[in-house]
Length: 267
Image 1 (tube, rainbow, N blue to C red):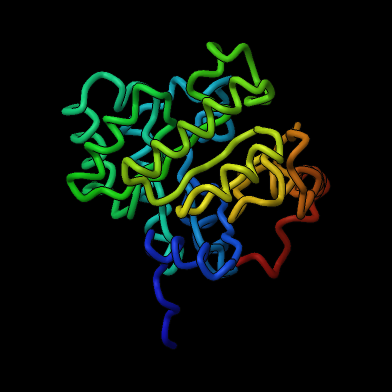
Image 2 (image 1 turned 180 degrees about the vertical axis):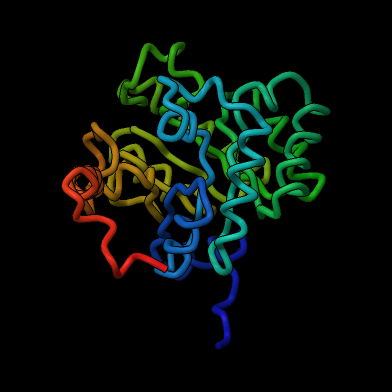
C-alpha cells in the first residue's frame, strides 16, 4: 500500500494559501503518533507540555532537552505522514545564539523531526533568524507562553489591552520577517488572532485563539478527555479518563474474584 505524502513546513504555507485548515495535536509516544498519523492529522507537536501531562510538573520549565529528544524520537517512529515539530524547552535557546543553533540542531539530528518550535519574546527574534539561517525550520509561539507563565502572572489571556495587542501584532510580523514558517497563537482574544492571521502570509495555529486561525492545536490528553481538568478552550472528543478508570476497576474485580485469567488465556 502506498503511503500518503509526508507533510513538510512548505505544505503549511500552501494549506493557508488554499484556505485548507490545519490540524495539529501534541504527541509524546509512538502509539499516539501512529493513531494520529493514521487519522490524517497534519502536524504532531512534541510539546514541552510533556512536563505537565507525562511527568506531573506544574509548569513546563523543568523539561530538559534530553527529555524532548527522547519523546520526539518515539513520535517520529510512529509518524509516516504528519509533520513532526519539537518544542525547544526553557533555557535551551535563551543563553546565546551559538547555544540555540546547537540545541536546535540536536533536536533535528538526533530525532528525525522536521522542525522546532520556540516561544518568542521580542529579544528572541535574532535567535529565531539565526536558527532559520542554518537551514532549520522554525515555528514561533506567542500570546500565552507557558515557559514564562510565572512572569505573566499565571494562566491568563494575553493581548487584552490595546497596547499589548499592538505589541503582539508587531511581534508576529517580526517573527514572519525573521523566517518562521508558522506561528502558534495561544490564549489571545479572537479579534486579535483574526487580525494577526489576516496580516501574515505564514499560517497561524490557534489554541484558545478563536476560529479564524489557519489551524488549531490541542494537547492530546485534553482532546481525548484524559486530563483531570481541561481549559475553557478545549473540546473533548472522548472520555478516556472515565473509560480507563472503569477498565482498571473491572480488571481489579476480575482478578480478585477469579474471573481472570480463564482457560482461554492459558498456554
